[in-house]
Amino acid sequence: MRLLAFDGRMGASGDMLLGALVAAGADPSVLSPVEDALDVTYRVHEVDKNGILATKVDVLLAEADGGEPRGEGHGDDHRRQPEPESGDGDDGGDSDDADGDDEDEHSNQHQYRHHDHSHDHAHSHDHDHSHDHAHSHDHDHSHDHTHAEGHGPHRTYPEVVDLVESMGLPAGVVEDATAIFRVLGEAEAEVHGTDLDATHFHEVGADDAIADVVGVCLLLEDLGVDRVVTGPVAVGGGETEMSHGTYPVPAPAVVNITAAAGWSVRGGPVEAELLTPTGAAILAHLAEGVESLPSMSVESSGYGAGGWDFSDRPNVLRAVVGDGGSRLVRDEITVLETNLDDATPEVLGGLQETLKDAGARDVTIVPTTMKKSRPGHLVKVVVRPEDAERVAYRLAVETGTLGIREHGAGHRWTARREFETATLDVDGDDYEVSVKVGSDADGVVYDRSAEYDDALAVANETGLPVREVMRRAVDAVASDDAE
Image (tube, rainbow, N blue to C red; front, side, top):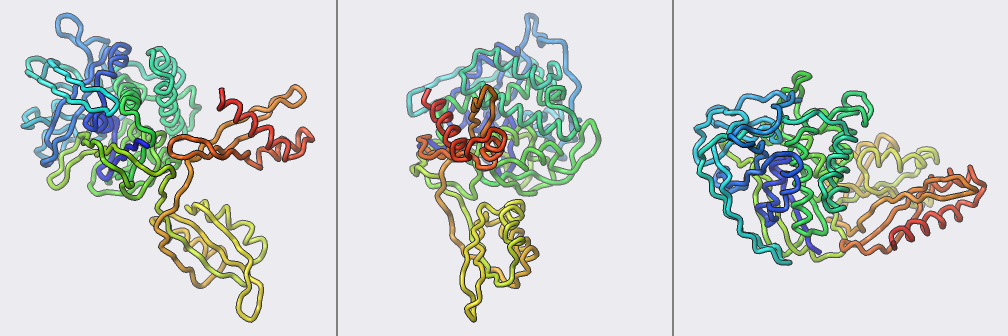
């Protein structure tokens, strides 16, 4: 199994993800469909980040004849550009929107969107099945280019989907890119209290953000990985300036996106915005969460440069590619348990939902015999290590228990789980039932099970037995997968 692991302890943004994937071996020439569709160009170059050689990818406006950028100018930026760190000459701020020129010297003090360089790039790509790529990028810095920051119309979600579908991309790339924009759109719609289809994306629907999202999907396909994971992602701290005012970090859209992500976030380690909405949405769709680098045979690695310069740590995103070995997913966990001898059936019946709301991964309640031969229950709760204290407190206040044991189980092996929707025709009417599909890390499906609540609702409406509804739903999904 080919595995890609991100280390996001200094955050993530669209340009950092682009740079990390190229540095880890993806071929930047696959980005050409985006350049053709948007009149932008990707500038790939190397920068020094606190002694780490990192790859920087800037999205620039392509030039028309005469050296002027194409297009009609910049749209209104959703975010206002913050001031750079003192003396660093970096654009700073939101790494999606603030990509300062981090080359050998920082002489272009806060030259927002303007970079002196030419695109005399010589690419040498050794592109075989092992994905070994050697990239050479030469720049003579002889003329100006304009960063594509905020350029282009502020598109709605349907407009973004239409644009992506018109690029002639592989089906998997289109599926991933549109799913990422749905994550972004739903997060922004929730922030503003609007409908997804009517919400304009502001900066995430502009040309540079589309280039980030679609570019990441193209590079990921080129790497040919089977599984993507990320450790906890740093969000930073302090405040960020937006067109709607000053907000605490993480920004509102980032909070909404990470609430539904399969990985965890951490505050700090600096007072700056490290995780952007675009970076969060890409990882939310593509990556599973892990607490540490999984066991793997490393084939390649690289660093994608962000827009901040700090005195004591590099603002980079690391990508590691290799053979992940295991056919199941390793999930870092710990186990909480307590004995109850006086809990009512109503309390026990609600523990599954209340503890999972607090962060539990699984809850098991086992009838047992307590001291003096009294009947009781053993409650076992599987949690991520970082959620243990919060879940333990919720278990205590819900049940009244005076003690909770923690067993350092270390990890568990789990299947990859996805949900597919089965559409059932019953007497001319269509009904939908969700089906959970379990597969190994190579994508081999070995279990399908219909969601009971969905099946029960259909059974109540149609008069069919629940078991029959569940059977039909599983058969329908299996048939679709086989096509």
